Image (tube, rainbow, N blue to C red):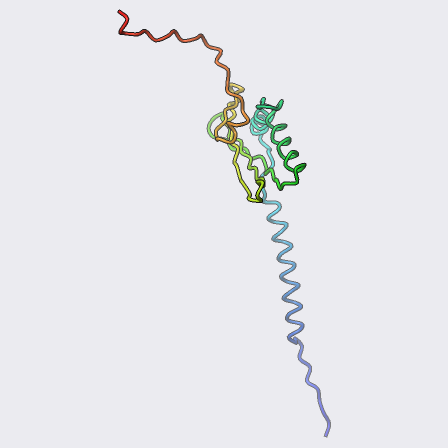
Length: 159
C-alpha cells in the first residue's frame, strides 16, 4: 500500500504568521497616521504671534515665561526628579484674543506626580498677556496700574 501525503495549503503556523504580519503592518500605519494627527503646527500667523507674545512676556524670576518654564524643567532634572513640559497649544477665543496652554507634569519629593495646566490669554490688539489659570498667575507679573490714583473715599461721619 502506498501512502499519500495530503498537503494543507494553510497550516496553523502560517495563519499565525500572516496574522502577526498583518497586525504589525496595520500597527505601523496607525502609528504613522496618529503621528500626523498630533497637535497641529502653528500655521496661522496670528496664532504664532499670540504664542510668541506669551512666551516672550516677562515672568516672575525670569526674563520670559518660556525661560521660566524651561528653567523649572532644568531645575527638576538636576534634582533627579521626573518632569515633562507638554506641547504649547494655541486656540482662538474670539477676534484677536487667543488662549495659550501648556501642561507641566513634575514629580514631588515623595515620588508623587503633579500636573498643572498653565493658561494665558493673549490680546493681540492690545499686545497684552493675562494669566487665565492659577499656575500661570504664579509666573506672570501683575500688570502695573499706570492710571491715576483714585481719590480716597470720603467719610460720611466727619461732616
